[in-house]
Image (tube, rainbow, N blue to C red; front, side, top):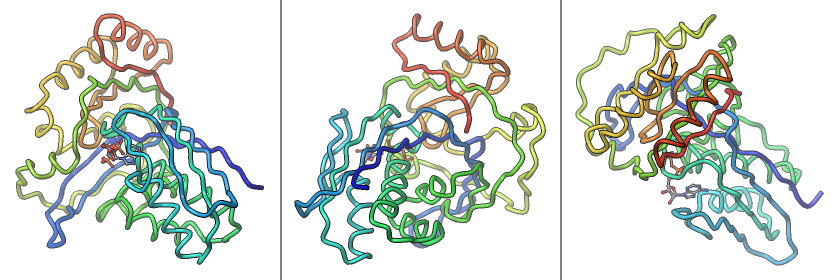
Length: 280
Ligand code: ATP
């Protein structure tokens, strides 16, 4: 096999606690991370012409070595000592610099896909070790389950029982830099003896943990985030929160029709990006 086309899903954070700043500049986090079915397509093809080529063509996404998918291929080829040529084509559907982990998911997908195409036989644990050096959210997308993520995001515990929900994903079309959000975060002392629940039997259990320490930072710069949350609640969302460093907001809905109606209304009345999605 020489070509593989895979889907790279997006994520939301049902919870994001920033526990402390670390000496290495990263932050220790405690997150509940959930994938959903808004996906980029990632086509990976082996080639006889040496070198890695990445094309995407979406605004705000670099082609070539600046693309995190390029760095994933480079890391894997170096480790395997292979000179094979690799062509990667990304069809972007996940909004960029949006808090939905699109780049990290593309990166994880290239690590998994090339491992398969080249027959390297690397374990997921090994791929996650390679992935965390490329981006803190990369291991989560290799893990492939709803997870409690600790450390910088690489210490993953599966949340085995959590109900699937319908989401309305709404983005006001402004890119937000994750680095900028962390630079502007005022850390308050937080006790980290809080135990995040591992069992979620109902949508109400999910809504009970919704929270994001980064939200206040991004909302201050982009108050439209608060407006989106209010609109989603008035359209029937039982919970609404900014994901990651934002600015994307997700609303949680009990019924598919409600989520679809909400995004149709918002897309019609505003210029926002709005899609309904199912959790994976
Ligand atoms: P994170 O919170 O992990 O930074 P995000 O969802 O907020 O993720 P991404 O869409 O992953 O943000 O992109 C962040 C930046 O990374 C973009 O501004 C873009 O220039 C760069 N980038 C590099 N490769 C990719 C890629 N494959 N897809 C999207 N962005 C990429």
